[in-house]
Length: 138
Image 1 (cartoon, rainbow, N blue to C red):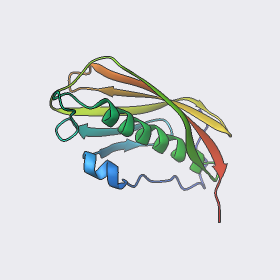
Image 2 (spheres, rainbow, N blue to C red; image 1 turned 45 degrees about the vertical axis):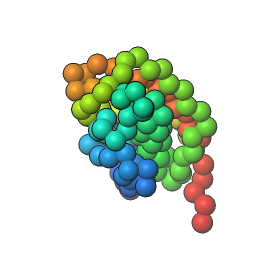
Image 3 (cartoon, rainbow, N blue to C red; image 1 turned 120 degrees about the vertical axis):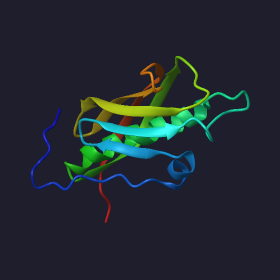
Image 4 (cartoon, helix red, strand yellow; image 1 turned 180 degrees about the vertical axis):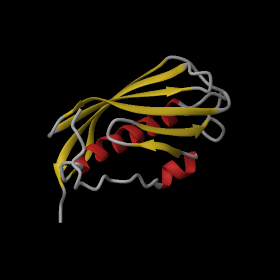
């Protein structure tokens, strides 16, 4: 992992409109790990299960936030270029925890693993997200 420069101001997460509607809460944010939670209630599909699209949306957000935090240490920003997910288990209620950890922190590309788990620690979804690091504009 890349050490955080002392004079760099790390980017701080600000929730977007969708994040707020989904009930996302930030628990932890650093270059090494971003953790958030989201309620299942309000994010279910018609069969009463956590919507796979909700999992992808929150996972992409958390993974991208992690990439932007790293990018900020280099004076850059990040944009998503690839995301993939495997759903392992469903949830009907409670709170899920979304954790992004780096697989690769480069100067051009980052890759993070994002794990969504339930209150028992069961893995519901595993995602991989790749972000391209770009120079900040203006």
